[in-house]
Image (cartoon, rainbow, N blue to C red; front, side, top):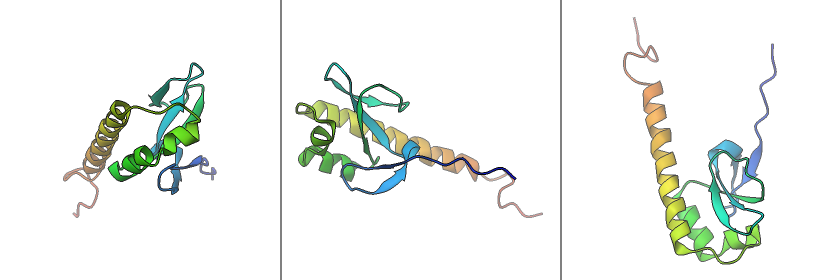
Length: 112
């Protein structure tokens, strides 16, 4: 029997909850000082993690949690709006994926 691969755990800068790295969004300050969303989680630079909830994104913006964590200059409202749109898309993709897994006729939960 093979051991299950250990998943890295990260902490959301807004709510301080921990979760698997893949379930959180990574925001990174690049070496040139700019801040961007890191979809693959592999960009070089200082990273911070956020939950995909609008509440966490709002807290991070209002309390300047990302700026503090990334040790960066102030982050624009437009960037937070972009992060919010990305989070909504991630949530939609996750919901769509979970409905496909348990779709009728897929063999899951079907009785003979």
